[in-house]
Image (tube, rainbow, N blue to C red; front, side, top):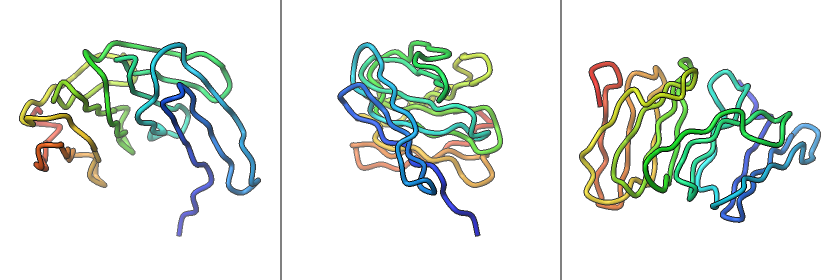
Length: 150
């Protein structure tokens, strides 16, 4: 049985916090320059934190540095984010109604999926990282195969 050690929280006040549950304390606090943070996730290797939000981009952070290690544009406000557990991939969804798949090692978009008619509100990878599920305000749930294209 695995135990969760860290919890991440983010806010529209432009900040995110990392909490150590075993030590029962906050271990770091980060802020970005513009726009609130809508979603946050730990990378599969648990070495970096990814954030998306109102600043219309994807940011990759280390807990050790106050500024993002990498940032790239995503073409609109992002509402949700998911990271693959065994691959250097992240998926984003937002007001542009697109599911976007990102290679975290290069920062490049490696896939785009269109199908929702309203903003995307949640994303999740399957346990084997082969499928991605997206949920939208249009009431639809879509399943994407990341190997055959979004």
